[in-house]
Amino acid sequence: MSTDSFFERQREHSRIKAEIVSKYLPAWANVMKGRARGPLNYLDLFAGPGYYEDRRPSTPILAVQAIAARDDLASLVRTVFNEKIPARAQALRQALDALPEAARLRYRPQVFHGETNAELAEVLRNTALAPTLAFIDPCGYKGLTRVLVLAILKNWGSECIFFLNFDAVRRALQNLTVEPHMQALFGTERAARLRELLPCLSPREQEPTVLRHLEAAMKEVGAQYVLPFRLRVTEPQRRLYHVVFVTKNALGLKIMKGVMWSVSTDLAAGIGSYEYAAEDERCPSLFEPITPVDDLAPELLRYFAGQTISVGQVFQEHQTRSPYIEKHYKTALLGLEAEGKITVIVPEGKRRRANTFPDWLVVQFPPQES
Image (cartoon, rainbow, N blue to C red):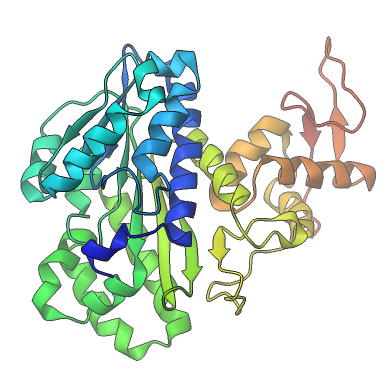
C-alpha cells in the first residue's frame, strides 16, 4: 500500500494496533509514575496526520485521549510526534490543537517533521531520555532498525512497540537492493542467514523462523522479552502483520500480555491467541496452537516439583516463558487444590476468601514422580 493511500480510511489492522498502543500507554505510565523522578515520554516516530480521511482517529489522537483521561497522567506525560511529510505534520498539529483533551495536558503535544533515519537514531542513542514508551510504525520497514530500538531501550524504564509488515519484510529479505535495511533490522549475519534459509522453507516455516531471528536481534540490543501479536487481514488483499512489544521488564510483559489477550479473536479454552484474524480469514494459524489452559496445571506440577513458593512467585517465574496471563495461573492452581495435588498454606495473620488465590498464599508442590 502506498503512503498516499494509507490514510484514506482506517483498516482493521490499524484499528487493532492503535487499540493495543492506547490501552498499554496509560498502564505503563501508571506503573512508572511512582518510580520516575519527573515526566515520562510517549514518542511516536511515524505519526501521520492524526485522522484518516473517514475522520476516524489514528494512534496520536487516541494516545493523547488515553493520557488526558486521567488527571495524574495528564500532568506527567509528555507527547512527542514525528512525521516526515510536512503537510501531514501540519495536519497533526492542527488536529491536536483542536482536540479538547489536549488542553488538559500539562505538556503541550510536540509535533516535528523529519525522517526517522540513521542520523535520528544516533541522536537518540547519544541522548539520555526520561522513561519513554516509543511507538515505531513505518510504512514498510525503512527506519525500523536495531540501533533505533537500542536508542530507546538503553534508557531506564523505556519500552518499544513497533509495527512489522511481515509480508514486506519477507520480500525484502530476498531483495538485494534493500539489503541494507534488512541488515539494519536483523544484523548483517542474521539477514544473510535468513536470505539463505527462506527459499528452502514452506510458508508455514518462514514466519516463525523470521520471528525467531527478530527476537534474537532485539535481545542483542538489550531486550529481555519480545512479544509479537499477529494480525491477519484480507482487505484489500491478504496481508500479514505483527505488533511487536520489546521490553526489559517482566511487569511490562505481564501487562502487555493482558492487553494483547484482550484483543485476540481466538479465545478458545479461555486463552487469547495473541492474534487478530479478520472475520473472513478463519484459516488455521501458521503458528503452533497455544496449549489449552487445562495443560497449564500439569506443567506447573512439573516445573515447580518439590518447591514451596508463593502464588505471586509462581506467576512471576513462569509467565516469561508462556503465553498465559495471571488469571490462567490462578485458575490452574484452584483446580490443582481441588484435586488435592498441591498443598496450600495461609500465612499467619492472613485470611483467605473462598475460591481465591491471592499472591501471598504459599503453595507446596509435590516432588516429581520418578
